[in-house]
Image 1 (cartoon, one colour):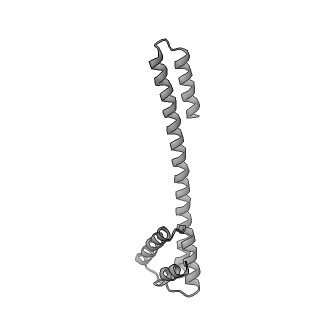
Image 2 (cartoon, rainbow, N blue to C red):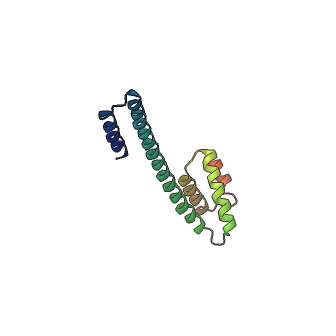
Image 3 (cartoon, rainbow, N blue to C red):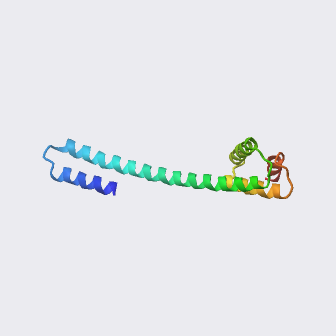
Length: 123
């Protein structure tokens, strides 16, 4: 819609222009800038939606991990979440995959203190 509006304004300026080529050049630049801003905005929105979706999925998954550790403290939860993020970045996995692997490992009897060493060895 924004590109269409800019195009309409540009057409009006060019069609009714009596000031010369300088205004036409400025009009063309305005349309190009408007299209670029629209494209960047759309890409940014897509990336933001993708990021928030990944964050929500990780939050849900890591919360499931913590259900396996009934006596875990908030401090330890924060520490494990940070370790999961660092592990995912270092090893090239998604946060969701790391949380799922943590859940499976802890379910199989790996302690929360040893889970990242176990996952590193398993990777």
